[in-house]
Length: 373
Image (tube, rainbow, N blue to C red):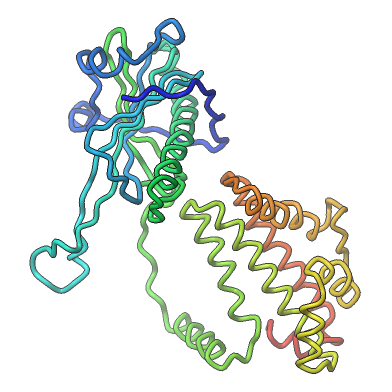
């Protein structure tokens, strides 16, 4: 074990995650390691009981979406103002041979992933903990995940392993096993802890109309007759990144979706106004993005484009998507789920506003409006 710095953990998220109990037979099959003997041998020697005397011990089992080649059962323990946080590394191996029409497994297609127990020994009386376990499970899971991200970042930086990345709850299984144990009596409570609702589901088969729509859009993309068609994928990128837990990428692609849309729209407005291709390229390249919004689009399409008026669509997008993207890219800070979710929402909302202004000017710009029927 390695004792780390004395550092206060972050606050738990505002999102409610639930736990569900198990019967005795199910609980007996869980992979948790804590016993009186294990605690006294592997954990207690690393605790400073004058600083924190634990009464409750938590264990969460998770599987990471990648592999950190730490040897099996390696445990890292870190002292925190909230208690002692421990991470026990293990490995799970699958084989992708099932993807191919062959018998048996191909060794080359083995996939390793890191399985671990995230554990916390905390100075909270057990009965008090159990009576508020949803609150504490949320608090300590988020705290453990935050500390685990520091370990992952340290590993990726030292080994230059780009297959590994920061972790959010959406990247993990929808439910994880959790156990809380009373260190005095060794009574425990075992159950499932719901992290998110992104559980696998069966999609409805495409009907004839769906297929016709698909082929229609395919024809548009193939012929490139609609300049706005390819830009729509960036909205989908942002939503997919958000649902998979990549908050940083979700924010970046939310802003990309707006910038591609605005730049394309500006070019098409200039084209419909009679500008040549070379004139359009020169004007577009020499006009800053925010100038396009504040001056060029507002003068042509009308409506409220004041970024300083908090009630406008443009202001909400500017604050929640544009400025957040700048902070995330310039400082490298990973946004929270709430921030990323708002960035996607307000980017889509702002695009809808711009589109409504285009439709309000359909007599002035009839060609552009044909693209949005």
